[in-house]
Image 1 (cartoon, rainbow, N blue to C red):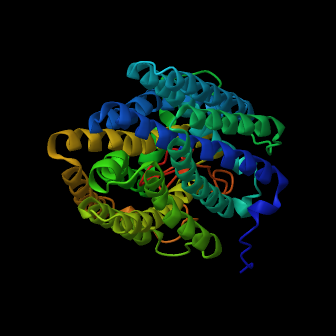
Image 2: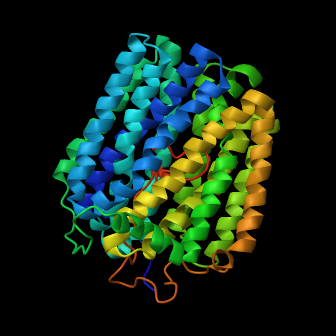
Length: 453
């Protein structure tokens, strides 16, 4: 067996160019996400108003994800990445103007809606483009480093946003920084030299073409189980959307401490991502994913019951670490079993799962908190997450029995299909701890506490 190189992806200049822009864009988006939640809660004192940000951000992704994935498979992915980053940077500048002028709240929601439209294309294109930026042998390493950088930005972003808001007493400068980060990735994207691939994706937009990614996920039961687990577990466990409420009303802390709380899941996730970069998951991947999501649910229960700042920090950090395991497994699994010509469309469907879990989870938490209080919202969500794990383990035995991530199912994609050439975040990334990696997320690619990247 060849010796594992934990820095293999970082040795490739093309990937370093992408990653340097991604860390700036992702950090800015994390700053914006933290500032928006805090600003809206300070203006309204309403958990529901905070939760509505998730609904506004999720709707365009859910509605546009299938056509966005089709576009990503049909046109130059580098150009799509560049233009979507320009669009997100412009929306962030618009948000700065809205905040500076103290425009009505609905205008702020409108800017978030525009950001969501850009993210509908940005997440899938980052996902689909990554295999063209690294050597096949370095793909899992690139996914893990994407996760690591996303977690780093998700730590720095909320803390920087909290510090800036606490020092200046204003939120709009945070959005200006976000715009600068997005524009930097757009500039770097223009200089990328992705590896050419032969795509058999249809050029015209058709319903059957858009649904092809969904059909592929339905056939690959292990992938479908992993995405369903993420969807329902994080939809119920989206209590971190209530952090402005917890910080102000339960823990009685200010802007900076709020930023630290929001960053803490990503501290745990970063530590876990660095560990996985050096010790990749080789066997019993399905069981590892199920246990990690169950651990995330338990951490949400502890967070919900805590009225101590330090215990809340620890619970969120442990939840982020547990969630990072599932983010990496899900992300690599999807890409190993997805043919090249379907990557954009599969990433589009994947983004629907991620957005429904993270952003609609925020709305669900805010709605429950309005009627039953934030503690009930968090604790019941954590309990629901654990129950979802038990249900998925029983209903999808293919996930429970999943061993190696690079094994094809029923003949799978093979080298001519996905291979180790998978996707980026959620976003954020990974959306992780949430996903996205997501990030960006978004976010990765991500699940868990908020793949807003």
